[in-house]
Length: 376
Image (cartoon, rainbow, N blue to C red; front, side, top):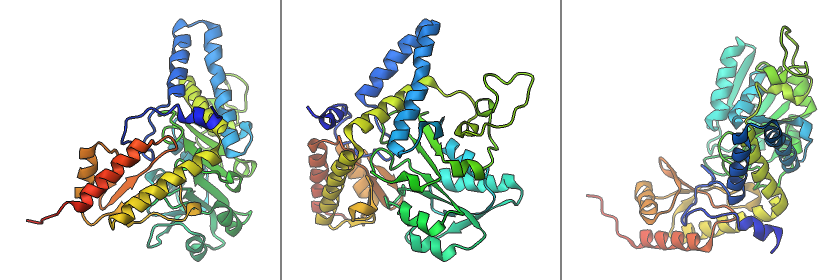
């Protein structure tokens, strides 16, 4: 078997699961890692604890390879929101972000602004379709803007932002901060365009909660104050007792305390599986599934609000049916897991989504399309 086939063999979630953009059921390799590390921690032996502690460096290295960066620039975080807080609470000036962004971006920017006492001003982008395009940013850009915070893949529509084009527009004088939760591991992108990249392993990497991470480039470390820097972010080696050392000049300044080694092990395993299988191959398989889902929706006349072009999307398909509640109920009754928000239904396949799930989706959509609807 090829490395990609080995990767596909780690998928064993229930038939009908199309909700990877919300949560990624743990892979078999991640579960094996959890059991092995838990047994080591149960002994309490220093040698066993040291072995599990090595997972931190392993996770940093695996994430660095996915992001195309240096392991020294990677910090492990309890969540992607924690990484965004480290970035945004240290900003000043006018910071741009979409008003319809996931709350990890919008709410964190609002909180950072309130804490800054006027030093940080949000500049909200409100394009009609919610997509943060180069044109939308250019229209609101001026000399007061110091940074743009953007989701690489929008959680509602699945629109994939053009990071290299945004980088070129912003120029070297402004920071580009990217929430890559919906893209790391499933989009073969040039993350070097961003100054800060945050992610989380609990979706597409299938590593569970607590497996967040962030990369802070040298430019980011120069311009972002490490406001939330804690014990592990200190410039002093070891435990800073009876001393108040300055934050470290390294990326570790943007950490608070020691990482969860079990979470680090899960992240190392999940990211390592993706690295071995190849992100490009994973992206291509997901793109095929997305094409199929769009074709099935088109066949039933269901509006698709996510991008159709492969280069402008990732693993999210957003549907806007005429009767969203009825279609959501049909999915639930058929055992198909999706995310329903108002008038939009979000489907998200992964590389390991099996043909049985696609067939079940097709059958459910056919039944939905052939079923009469009476409004009494």
